[in-house]
Image (cartoon, chains in turn blue, purple):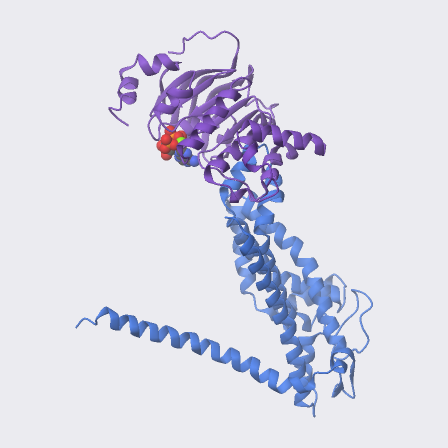
Length: 283
Length: 258
Ligand SMILES: Nc1ncnc2c1ncn2[C@@H]1O[C@H](COP(=O)(O)OP(=O)(O)OP(=O)(O)O)[C@@H](O)[C@H]1O
Ligand SMILES: [Mg+2]
């Protein structure tokens, strides 16, 4: 028997709607729960003071600062390399075994579990290169982890810029690089920025890569240089949730809330940038 | 073929030029002379290699992957593929306007100054003067003079095409190539472009692929009929359009095929 197509349409619609709602519910629940549990912990002291009394009191300031530093460090290490590699792949590279190998490497890098990056960072940066547990080692580790995201999104953003602009640039006597700098990059910028922020956002929330490379269990003073260890929000959250007996729930969720706000703010920034430029885009 | 005596030296000379995409020939064994202060109209049915021939003249054909050129192209007697010829300089001497206008996503002013600013530095005064001169020559100045800093993509199709012409003129080229520059334009815009070209002829060599035979006969001083990559007939436009020597040319212009 053939089901009438309007009935089919209704069934399909119902299934898809259910799927959409089921995806939304956990998200709302997670955010709602963390806000409800953590909002009571928030105060000026909470974000501006160091932890006290075995971390059961005081604030999370050193961890917050550490995460900001690590995010900046990740940006500094991953953006130039990632964007550079993407420009090479999108604008210069011919399709040959060399570039195919690079692409394959990038895809594989994206699939490596973050704890493996952590061990890699420990071996290479902390021990072999003698950076010790430091912001430098942590940033480099997070940077390498972020590279695949940045390369992939940047390359997509570049490829999306119409080919005709490149031909026009060449026809007016422009070199490939002049075309990239004057036309292609500015047009791809919103897409690139979005990719960068999404990558950094993931790095900011990761625990495993910083575990062996930079994160301090308890270090109330702020780092003085890139060779210092630092506390960081995700690891601090892990520590106070699992390693400290008698920890007030409120502080755990307050910390989670701050981390979430930090990451969501970056996300919001990415969305705003995309919106702003999409409205201005002319092709 | 190729026997029309024109006084003066040829600006561009094509010597047995063939171009292949992979192993498919797009144009074959072309011999052609292009003179200064003339408009050459290259016409022929679709896929006959007109665009390919045009792009060979400023080495935009280099961009085609798998493209291969045979024969030589001489600009003022110098082979444009000689190793000491700068392709960048060549493209500013031989400018091209495409069928579909592609304004860069910049302002009107920036579109016009794009080419000049790629090379040596120029003073603001020089640039302003160049912008006005180029836009006037492209018959666009009066329509855009009060909105030079506005986005070029907001212009109408006809205006965009004249902007693309102005952008090429700002390179101060010696040769201007135009690939069906009026194909998307209304009759009034078309007329404006043609008028601009007739004026530009005084100081340039112009090679145009017209979008129909009428346009070829309206503005061409010389005409070349291309068929399946072969140059069938070349000569004074008036003669070709009234008394073609080759029956294939006759068939085409009287509309018996293509
Ligand atoms: N980039 C390219 N790669 C491969 N083949 C191409 C390319 N450009 C053109 N060709 C082929 O070369 C031949 C000539 O094309 P060309 O565009 O030069 O003809 P045309 O006379 O300009 O045609 P039209 O009137 O449709 O513009 C065609 O068979 C076409 O398929
Ligand atoms: Mg064509």
